Image (cartoon, rainbow, N blue to C red; front, side, top):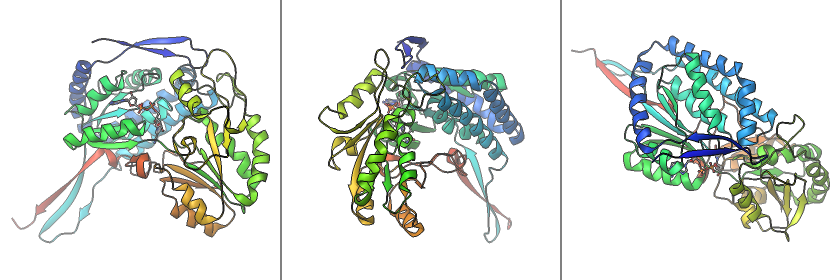
Amino acid sequence: MSYELQVLNPATEEVVASVPATTAAEVDAAVARAAKAQQGWSAAAPADRARLLRRFAVVVDEHLGELAQLEVREAGHTIGNARWEAGNVRDLLDFAAGGVERLSGRQIPVAGGLDITILEPLGVIGVIAPWNFPMPIAAWGTAPALAAGNAVLLKPAETTPLTALRLAELALEAGLPQDLFQVLPGAGDVAGSALVEHPGVAKIVFTGSTRVGKSIMARCAERVKRVTLELGGKSPNIVFADSDIEAAVAATPMSFLDNSGQDCCARTRILVQRSVYDRFMELLAPAIESVVVGDPADEKTQMGPLISRVQLDRVRSYVTDELQGIRGTAPEGPGFWFPPTVLTGLAPDAPAACEEVFGPVAVVLPFEDEADAIRLANSTEYGLSGSIWTRDIGRAIRVSRAVTAGNLSVNSHSSVRYWTPFGGYKQSGLGRELGPDALTAFTETKNVFISTEA
Ligand code: NAD
């Protein structure tokens, strides 16, 4: 049955576009076309594939401003962030292009012959993306999958299909073969499910909620379909008394307010050693209150709206009036606005302290010593990111080893670079994206023994 997606500007609630959505039958046809295109693509000379991906990167770069503006309108991202996001797509394409000619197998010593491994593309890859970083997350799966010789069918989130559709047009403009990279906007339980259940799709790369991720993993298991999951997080920001407290405070607001907190790596559990707790809170209040929240198209804005009314209601449900803490400001009127919020006095197992809010809300919890900090940091079902603030190098290494999360940073909140691996422990995910092995995740290893005795 045909249907449409309505794209709203989250800052104004105005309709930006209506997009025809993909039906299950259309997914079926897209898989058949992609499989055909993939055969020619994987047979092409590596240098030619690399050249086309580099050209795709150049075309994205030429349209950086346009893509960024589109992201501001459909996702409410600040213009500064949106430019970075479009640049991230370009950089990923360049990085993946550099891997095409380097994607080689091995020669393993055996008696009586020659043993080699061949890295073969999987075929057609389904990339299912969320709305919080529509462009980068789409590219994290798409760029290395194409570079490794696969075709890609990308299903963007219902609320943010526009940049993905534009990227597909730019791919054709760059000269990528028709049908090799197709964008299929649509509902998760229609177009998304059709990709997950299609026997012609060899692997699903999913980024989104843990709830949907579990259901996708279960359905992929039916076919032993390959799957990568990038799911939720509730990441700690651990501030020890021996750290540079001023630096730790200065970095705290945007560690959970960037992208209005709709970031799976957001440091939303701020753990502060009790001996510096009062000092930390005293410095944090003005830092939170001065965050500039407003029109995302304005260069000075640090935080924009939430993506949708659904998300706004979800965030509100965690922040009831009687809770104590620090509240910043947000615009009144149309748009999905919520102020920067820091909650104090909560038990570590309170919903706001251990569930993923996915909004501009953090909790501060005091801890006594290193062992207590590690225990608190590990006491959620998630394990995606985390930060450790200390001047003691031994402690930095000990705590980095002890925290069960995939992406940690010391005296910084940085965790995502396209050339370093990214992914979660525990219920934050399965598998890794980005980094030196990004292309290998889109291949099967075939071992061939050639006898010299015959
Ligand atoms: P979501 O799980 O609702 O949707 C993600 C994608 O899955 C969308 O494209 C959606 O249409 C699709 N989908 C929904 N139901 C489906 C189904 N039954 N079958 C197949 N596809 C289906 O998540 P969301 O609300 O779009 O994104 C927010 C969540 O994503 C947060 O929980 C966040 O932590 C997580 N996230 C994780 C990472 C990471 O790298 N770990 C990155 C970004 C977002």
